[in-house]
Image 1: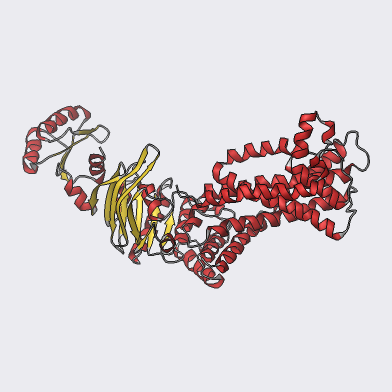
Image 2 (image 1 turned 60 degrees about the vertical axis):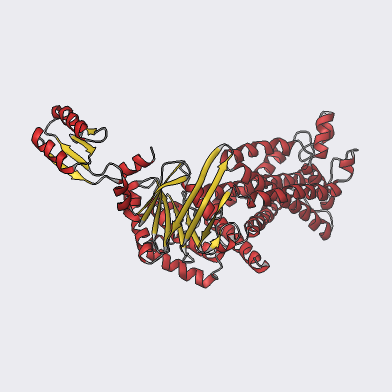
Length: 303
Length: 257
């Protein structure tokens, strides 16, 4: 296991940040910690990167105990935090050389590594401009590059795309996928389901400082108690009420109405029966059965 | 962590500060010239009833004041790194925390040397002179840097505790009364007795008076024990400050929430 955590607890005064969090991340995978604000994601990353001392429990990263051997952990990890940790006065290249030297690469190797990483993250044209002039996406990529200088065994990404525009976000996603393809173990935290779904091999849903569900994205969707969803698109807004009433009768939960899309959806157990009822009783524009989205899983789990 | 790496990392981080100067010469220039501006204001606009030798009294006072201004520079640098997340990154690197503090200290001392040189040159231009021997003069500069050294640890500690730029602004404001409630510009004997006593014992006054004595410049005189023993106090005050602030700064830097 690249990361193992066992019963991590942490409280800040009255506020419980971690309430017995367990985690096991296999080497070479992308692992997503998914949860709302205040769920304990950043605290978890803090404990695993030796920035925060846990009150109880133990954790190892790359085989080193975070409490007993913090220096050993630091030598094997990269951290990209919520705020791009780069020196805005220095150029992109100066940043990477600086951090490379502080990782004890030596001047010439630090320079060579900076060149490699600037090219890999598509920053060679901006390499000699101050990082303060970079766009949000470029800063993140520079930040990622800085986290990768020593080819860490485990890379921690704390909300790597928070506050980025969609284009910058997809740039960062591409970079993370490329890392995963190279076999780097990545532990990322996110509030965005789409991000976890797209990037992570496994996801842990975190809320209230503990893991409430864990597994590959597909399996999490399967685990949802209500099974598949039926989705009915009506011809006009006036039909919405009738469709909602029907779905309420055949569904196991309150239907969701989306007036803009003229759509009503609800989870069902008896797929064929539900389909037959809708086709028989409604003159609908379209009807479909689909797997629940991760959004629905997430809302269900963090209720 | 071997001593070799600590020294090498300290130097790397000092180099970072020097690279900042090279990339933003204007910012550095403003920082160096601001005390000169204050000097000119006092020498020509606010000299009041003082005579032609006012620059001789004033320049050592301003050297001490400029040294105290350095507190803000240290604090600002620490707060900026904290806000940018750079402190967090440095903490997750396999390097010694001593180098992070050491790099800040060396860079700020170099900056102080440059600042003192510029201010002394400006003072020279308006009539201030070193009227003592080389050793005494070096002793004066040494005492100024000694005060600056103590304020580095105060600045690091305050910067780590404050964490926000607004806090730096309030310290910037508080430095002014501290700077003026001293013997830098006027004779404490001219103040109400209780204020004069505070001004006499102000650590900045000790350094200013000691610097006057060592440069061979005229002082205000004064009968208080503090006014009679400025060099001793200029050695002791920063030592006390360092003894208090250095462990605080290190503990604060090392503490994990």
